[in-house]
Image 1 (cartoon, rainbow, N blue to C red):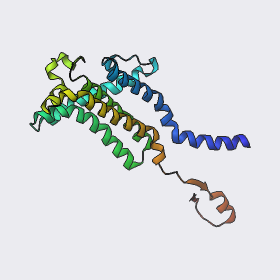
Image 2 (cartoon, one colour):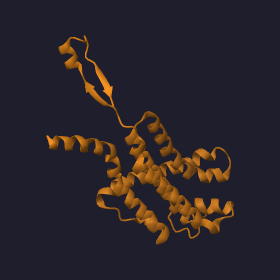
Image 3 (cartoon, rainbow, N blue to C red):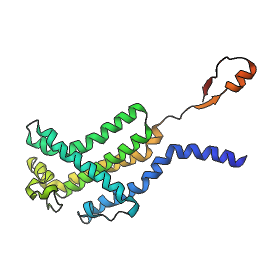
Length: 218
């Protein structure tokens, strides 16, 4: 009986916090990767030695984010403002997971909300590393584009703050970390589901109901 009570308590706990536990190790690795990128060698942003079981996961996330990034340049390019065209890559990579998060939040899809926050955090981390490369421009650009095509070199130069590239990168890193923490603690903001008790059998026995019913109790 005590064992059954223990199981009754542990199962709801893992149902609530399971995704947070599942994402903790990838999240920790992601923080380490981009911390090292900003403090040690920017090439950790593209050459980080992921554990074998996470290689495929981060490959899919990175490839998807990169495709969305490039699509953002094209989409925002229709507005005809060069700064927005350049910013559009990063902006789109943040916007898509954020919109998915908003949709999941509205539909109360907690698991989807947490995964989209994790993706949004990744998008900000990768943008932070891109920004941290604005001065030295060591990161390889897609399609072997010249260094002059570096997004953050251009944007920070337009804003006359290229010399503040590290400050901007660390601000973006902090935003990334805050989003990741929110991803981990998101179950705290979910109201407890009401326990459902099926009384159809009892009601039938007592002849108090003609159809099976269920009621909710706290």
